Length: 202
Image 1 (tube, rainbow, N blue to C red):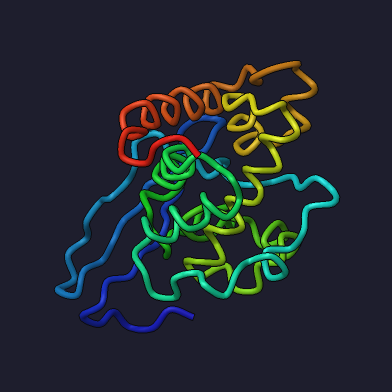
Image 2: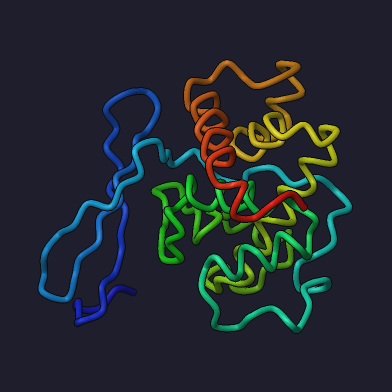
């Protein structure tokens, strides 16, 4: 339940259905009551984890106790990237594309947190608290690792699977012909290329 706004800002989603695909705008209400649009241009409510392969171990079972409990989002991203063997720049770019690193982001479809995990997927991943920054990012990293393994470490295909689901990638034999998914893959690849120097390959 959302209470009255205080000096701490809170975030909510307004989905504007202007085309068959939903375009989400993210706003933040600051403590002084001002409405600030912090939308990422290409973020769509469909940009969520939606399908989970069998056999993926739960985050709660493999997440090390050494995870930084109160570190920055970027620290959690680097920690999860190392733990799950995902390129740090790749995981960082997915987090940016999904939520602009916003742990309070919530899509109109119900996806939550930095990595925009759907409630059912979060449960399947063993994420007991999807609002926890460390668990949410670990869940997204685990799922992304599974897609990389499923598609032979082909990064564009893994990203397409994260966005549209692995079933769609297999059905079309590549990146699905969805404008949203194609833009999603292209923008993440571009961002990763710009930021990879800061993380280096894993």
